[in-house]
Figure (tube, rainbow over the protein chains, first blue to last red):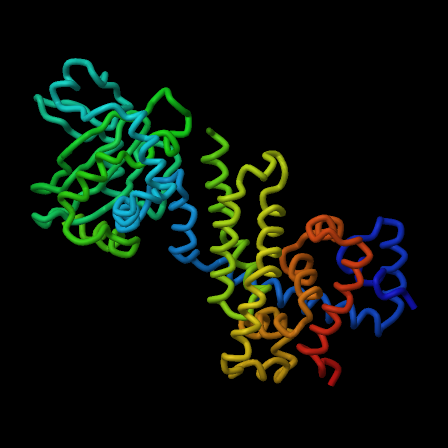
Length: 243
Length: 168
């Protein structure tokens, strides 16, 4: 009779080749051991399949959010930011990150500043000027249309908060290395409401360096009606074409 | 820097597996997701302790297992006595079905839940998660012989629970 632990080590593929061959021969010659091996294989397969169904499930939003709401990230609850701003004594990490971002993001960029070269317009910039108006680049427009904050992308503009303003329009904050800002849906188009210069060159990790610009969030705070959309509301709004 | 982004990306990619492991340790899906969330939060707080170049999955599993030992388990045990045991007795009622490859999650969780903790984690890591004996001994700081013997006891108990009458 094979030692029990050796039998299972063989079953689990943990034995060196020569020992494995030896055990295999013994098991093959012993119907009871063969049956035991089959039962354990079937049970292990059953367990893997049963728990494998978990792996195949959609990951709950709250788990995804727990990664995204890491202080270095920008997808944060505005209510949380508000609350921590009211409690000045104990600024949250998030607010501290915002302060860091403020030292890196220098000032509101207006259309004039843009066209005067303050923020050189390049194809990679999220904002471009067209006939004296600030317009979203193709990348940004795509992001504003299609990107969900709950499904972040690795490159290009990233969407932060989505919410309805007091006029009923849907607005979304965005951020990339060059800039962060706010765009709202007007007349079936994304209109850029504001742009803050980003922290390009300060760090390769724009999520850390850019962070949520506090002035952007102040602006959001001043025009928002209610609370920012949660993941489900964001998705529903996308399906309805941001109306 | 770059590693900060890839850390979060890798963490995100690990979520399905982390949830699976949490389900093998926990009594019910809600506890499992609480455990997963606590693990992610702990990992984000401790990210500087992770050595790039080493396996993030092993590191995360270890965090999850330790959290489960430290805190979640106590709470889950408490819950156990407060929650109705409505479905626990279905374990083993139909051994043929229980041995089938489509062994349902609930039944699997109930069976795993009946194992002693030290056997459950070893069974989960090796039979479900697919780690090798050596990897598990390193993850749990246990001699490989201890891992091996716990695994034998755990899987033997599981088989007894799930398939008492396979030779009928």
